[in-house]
Image (tube, rainbow, N blue to C red; front, side):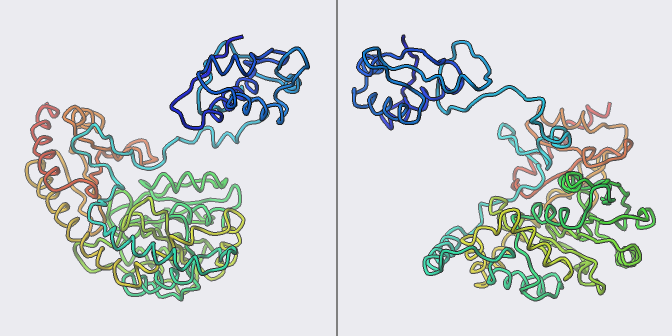
Length: 490
């Protein structure tokens, strides 16, 4: 028989042939008892040496996929015939090969995971767009990669001198010390290094909290509008999700349910609207949590970039009863691919969280942690923040000039004191989808507020992320948008 095998280049010829033959056998396209061409004939068909095909057949024979019959040739073994298999017609075998199976009625994920949306955060940037206001994107162009390379080299040298053992689940001591110093100086969160847990980003911290704190059926409260990945995380833990509205002062504490086990808030820069939680409302929330025995998760996701007003005290700095778990991330200050965040939980949760971390993946990448510790302790992190603060301040000012100027008849900006995005309500009768679609035709990426709300009727609006778009692009995009809006309003 002729076997259709694709050879690409001259690299790893035996491997390419082996993987395609093995895939044909496993997937059932080469059935048990099928006689294969001789190694000489197959080598001639494929234009390779006979030694290459001999090596392939010897490996498949040794693994039991083929059987040799003296004087008759080489055949596909009958071993896999005992397994139920999906039957295939003629399919060209190409790399990479993956065993394909039909969906089993018994081997299924929990319905929750089949219903979960495939993407939980803001939409990713569309490269075809000339101007994209996607949220959550940062500008890596000014990151000091030469300095970072030296930090990585330092970490490699340190790791070469360390024993090959598993490390502490809570993270490397140097990084925990650097984070504790940073939080104490910049965010008024006073903690010792051994109270800090290093995580794989803020989402990982949320997952650990959910698994440690929540029992299935217990109530988890989120802001409305709020952060969809947090909602998904707590739902995955089996929690009953309750959405509580926000107003100009933040979460409306009076509307909290009586028996909530956990409350997730973004008090420094409410996501996605941007206003801070007032001091009075913070005190109310802490009082409520103490009476209810609930845990507060404070997500301080991008408050490093404050542009006006006095920094608001974090809930954690006001917490005297061990109620607040404070989490943060380096995704907005360095870059998301770093996958490093942190948590400063109540003392009563520290041990259980470390055990949960061990159960999941033991600990994070020590090379990255050691490099980041050097980056912070050497003062390079603070220098980078100052540089980016100036850059983002210019972009924010440009955006607000447009929203208060040529776009003022159609937008009402919610002016945040910090962060790298802002929200703007659409003045009626404009609809989010219509504005987004018209902007996309002009190669401008805009994103709506509706997806962050749980309530059906909300005031339409947009999020303008300015972390990944230059001042010149903001100017060009919003000048073009201002020309589109009169047509949409008619």
